Length: 316
Image (spheres, rainbow, N blue to C red):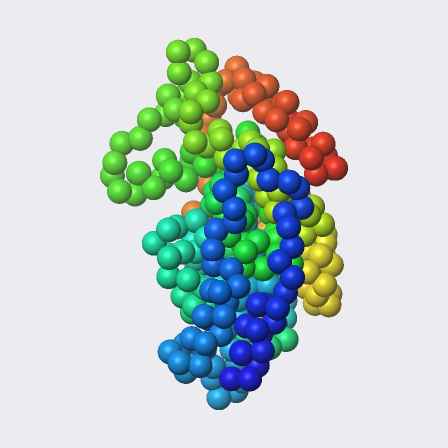
């Protein structure tokens, strides 16, 4: 109990940093919960949540010290599974959607804590919800909880991400035996790219990154190269370990290429496991001219993103 109360009180005692960049005129102040909510959580732990948050062996539930914020169809599940190979990482099993779903957020940090896995005090608790990156309210809410949190963002070539996004929605409809338009029908309207298509907006990385940089310095956000993670995962995971200040415990031997599936799988304590069959699906065939339009559309946004984060990626 003392450890839980101390953890909650330390969160309360943290200095409330101002956003790393000035808020735009007329911007709303960061949403609650803030200090008062954290104090309420500290008190609640003594009552309802404490019996559910501790075990006889000393395991506790902790608010995450790291969040994988996105991007959708960027490789967030693969990143979480790979990071879970580390013995000092405890990962939430499901996407929590605390900061972006109002029906969850209104329950407060006590509810959020209850969604976290049991962990040892020395372990790092991680959750992933890919929709966080593109949800306008989320950066302020995460900052209100913990301005010192470390964030992981995994990105792929924006055009490839759009196609993966479409593929997932298409197969979801197929499984429910519902019709869904072709990729050309959703991407093109009146002979031009349909800029209202949500998947296109999700790939405008600079727009969403600017929102996060209003509240967090770039040094608190590690960008994982999702395309490189597919091709050669070990070096990317090494970078994540260093960013999270974890001792190097994940090794090249933890990865092996599965020729049948066409991507890397994991080997953990002699047990092999691969991502769900829904991962790594083949994209639909796209007319080369339409693909060229897609690459052209993202050319300038990509340049803006590279300038924003001070690095480049091998994207079209």
